[in-house]
Length: 446
Ligand code: GLN
Image 1 (tube, rainbow, N blue to C red):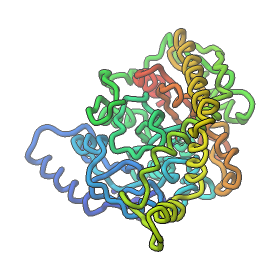
Image 2 (cartoon, rainbow, N blue to C red; image 1 turned 180 degrees about the horizontal axis):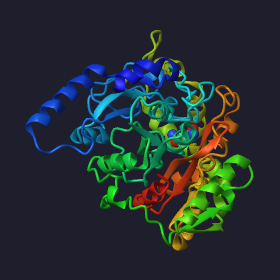
Image 3 (cartoon, helix red, strand yellow; image 1 turned 120 degrees about the vertical axis):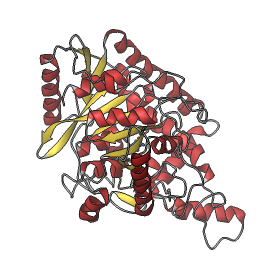
């Protein structure tokens, strides 16, 4: 079914970088046999899933949408892939993204532009734009994305689907090609909250291969979907409904809050006073970490190597200048500068301190409230090409999602209405490791 739908719409949406039809059919056959002979089946038995192309898949090309990895066939599976296999899911293919997950529109892909299924002139968001678009277009019911500063939630909002960034440490990063290791998390993108809970159930939990994965029990997420939110205390940060947020988006969020009130929840306005520093802090820290993580792409170990080098240093230089796109180069330069001696204290160390203040803002609010609610993005999906010439306006699109990564807490985006035919996302943010409450609130809308 997935391949039939893909054949119908993929030339318009262009969500996939690689399709794996042969293996998918083989796996489906295996599952048919299992159906006939065995009694126990995985939680995602026979479910088609698309994978963001920065998650390594054994024997299946993994490019991070970068020319520097155009021919990279990993020799192992990411932990999330192993868990999907054990759950009997069927991998359909690899999904487009901004190169190395740097961007908010998938326009930074080194290979192709993915379009928003709701309006083909508009971006699907990013960096997990291929994942969100494939789910929205009905090509796959399940997808994995990754979120460093909003890359699951923002495209989910733009494409009208459900996307969760789990708590930092909830899902193993082993086999996720690192962008900013202290912020990156893999998470599920689906049509419904229930499907989302199933997928998280499969991928969550401690992994000895990732020392930052947390030894915290994984609860039964499905049983959290009770529909009961009586007495729930909601905080609405005034910074999330203020300047820069469009009137229609604000109205959609207020309407959603009314629905929750009817179901027995209460809400109050609060403040996250350090939010205004989040964008600057994030771009310093994320770029610093990226500049170190991307040092490994040198033409020796993986992927692309220049053809005309005079010596080793020249080979490194040419490989990297030819292989990386502009946004990736911009971040490497910014990060290298911020980490250089003499500037380290003024930039990197200071940004780390501000990160702590931002985290404390959230902790304070969560002393009194169960969840924080606001919009996912200031506006619905923008037009292709609209923001490519000005990186700063592109960066500003993530203003409401980035603080969540800096604090390490979980957040979901679910659809909450339309503005001029384009979906609007509602963001629900929870306490550390409390994805269950987020799902319970999100499910109340279904
Ligand atoms: N858009 C943000 C960036 O460009 C976030 C990306 C992400 O979450 N991977 O860094």
